[in-house]
Image 1 (spheres, rainbow, N blue to C red):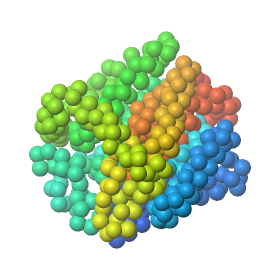
Image 2: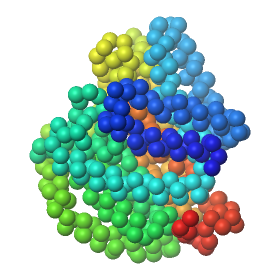
Image 3: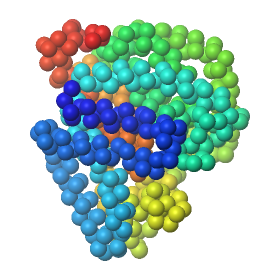
Image 4: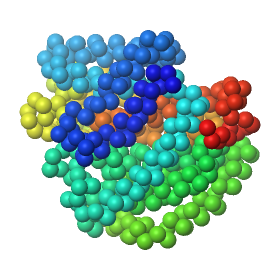
Length: 441
């Protein structure tokens, strides 16, 4: 395997297991491990230049983004005396993830996606078992440690905490199960990236994860994934036939999982939390969506300071890690939402432009995913729920959310090239026939 692709794997595996290092193995290094993937990301960029694998297709976008952020960073360093530590951390948050994602996306081939998908399914199985153990364990148990000394996990309901798996906190498994579900459905629908027993076992694990994690976000995003399956089914008779073929077995797996005592117990806990959260947010599901998705955005736009800081307060200045470093206290001086943080740190004009870039990238990937689905390659479309929500809502400063945004963009960019790589893959013996089949190698 070329060194560049070894670095891709290092980035992916550190994303999955970074939390385990911070919580259990080397908790005294919890703070430095926040940025443990950043050196790997820089090595990916350097190696891409060295072996001439830089994504030329994205040279204009990456060049413009780099120049614009460097100019703004310099202006903030000089004009408002933004601390250099905050500036470097801000560049790490705003620039590095997109450069890494474009390099990965343009250099991942069909075989690479198959391997990443297969290992995602393998990891899902022990991850779900760990989440069950965390759900059963008391809040103060070793399994439910937080990423910092003396901290724990978020309260769930009924005396339980939100399972975090190997991640630092609950945001990690939420994104991971959505990624795994996309690969499960792709394997069932089009390309058997793994043996059937692994696909169906992973299907059951994904169903079991829903009440264990206790996240309404998981429910909404998996519902979006089902919608994407429906869209893919409408793209051709063959894909519609495949959807009908897997519908009954998927329902059967769900019914079997629902018979497990732990599923029933966790479902009752989830129902209690769902009802309580809806009550606090207005009483209905529609009002809950407005309260969690729409009103926070409007609030962040309304409360961002557009007059005192036309070029922002300084990139990285609102990060919790920088606040802890500079004041000794963890403060969210720009709020916890991504839009408010971007508008406040970069200023109204540059902040809006940066969010527009993310929106346009999400729309481009969605449009390309639809085109790819018409060519009987639905993986990019199945990744849309994770990719779009990551681009629009993920907090780039937060390491786990940033990591999944990188992986989602990279896998989506690679997936929109699958139909073009299919003849090449077949000619090299990676798979035979159409659709591609799992070869066991």
